[in-house]
Image 1 (cartoon, rainbow, N blue to C red):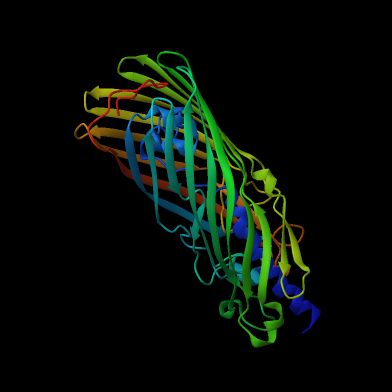
Image 2 (image 1 turned 135 degrees about the horizontal axis):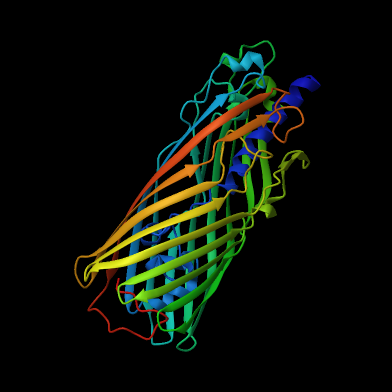
Length: 438
């Protein structure tokens, strides 16, 4: 095989892996609590998300007397279209047109359970998907050599133990066991073949990894809760394979592996009661996406790196504010707004995730059906800044020097439903940082 062909296929395979992982900066899934979503996740680290708040801060488990379980089901409807820009896009590809709507609807389940052993000790379990991605442009389009489909799936199990030190301080920690899987496809450019006939190559991989969570809640006075939680990075040794469609390219296919560290997350929350029936919630989240650095893809057969991929992400920051109002003894209304500074910008944006800064507006409600069962509902709309993409010579993403320039318009609608159930007879309120009505 000629050196040019070899370089072309390797570049396509590396771009597939890297572009998908680049998406990780913006496909962190925050939708772990219906209740918190109605507040745009303001105060989640201080317990505004109910039992499910242990995703952000495990110490909030001590705010739930007795044996309590929550289940949440969230539909994420992403709409995103990439339009090629001329000049800027290779003329032979610009005529193939735009991506169409690359967004693929996804349903994300999440749950949390807490069990109070005594007036000092709690056990709990949180399950959900901390990361995820499903995008699929048209099979034939102007940016096909940079992405035809992307799918990333994760599942995390986070058992925790919480300890109420005294009336104003609670602490908690636990392991975070995470499964990670990806499948990425892109067009493989072959000299002499029309771009409309390019076959697809793929990269698949999966891994299990372990990290930890820890946190604390402080109650400096009645009606005020401050929470701080930390989710550590999870190290993944990803085992996978690269597949190419032609027998002549078989030497480039085979088993590969890569090392990837997910970002650390620090969450800070405040819940402040301003009356017996109203509360204000504030939130801040820091995600250390910059730790991704350079991902190397190594051939198992050769024992040598296929390539190094400089991701060069920024850290992500989210700021949120929300309010809750108990409109009736069995009804609570919520609203919230958040701004999220994306770790992806023009320097590292790819067609697999044409992400930008986000503005999130949310509303929600809880209805107490009876003493044991509470129903939750929330809706959010994501406004995303219009963004630009540039790939080719001199850029991080470059397949066979095929230039692609695009403009992206995106938005998202998210609907979440959930319930909270108290097992057995309703327990008496135990001393806790803040006794919430629901």
